[in-house]
Length: 292
Image (cartoon, rainbow, N blue to C red):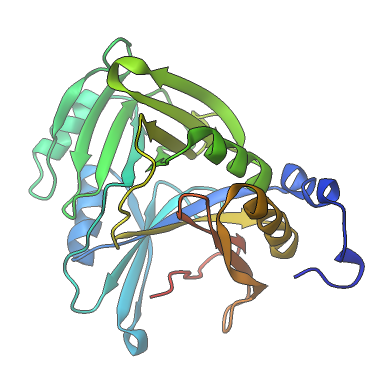
């Protein structure tokens, strides 16, 4: 991977890059069985905007990006419909997406009045706390947590994934991707621990919520959720750091860094120690990154 003056760099030099890089969570990619139905659900129930949509008949798929703001400043959801496939297995590893809203009770009533979504956990405070939440699955079964929170620049605030060894995952995302551990909470009465990882505070950006359930070290990931994309200033330096960390903590590089044919950007992709896929790319607007 490293060539010329980059070859043979000490590990401490390679691992300085994630601390300096201006990384940002860009979007999450997943597959849906009826794209128009899901777009209708997200816009009518959750208040998202359709940012763009593209049909690629030669490769037999259509995708759409939805979110609460422009892709150059906000996190987005990339929904992909593969021609003729109307159902996917979400698996047990994917947890939920989360939406922050100033009035979860009101949002829940909007969802209840729709024909495409439903509330499975009524709005109310979390057990043992004061934060008001609710849960609403979309038509494909992807769960959305609704969190009552004051005004925020990023309402699409969480991607929750389950992991088999929490401290290992925290270390991986810190060292390989320069994320910060924003908070960690153990809930022994319900036998789980969570860690919030991100590039800014939870009320300012989208974060990864990593969840460890006591005694569970592996999950079925299904074939529905695909990956999360993270913007970087240099895919080569980012891949170099990731590859070094995978040798210590697990995971592997899937795609060596380089240009993406036909599109004006460069990418690298890899698996974290639990097998969750991450793509790092130069953050160029209006590109599609799902490999079918």
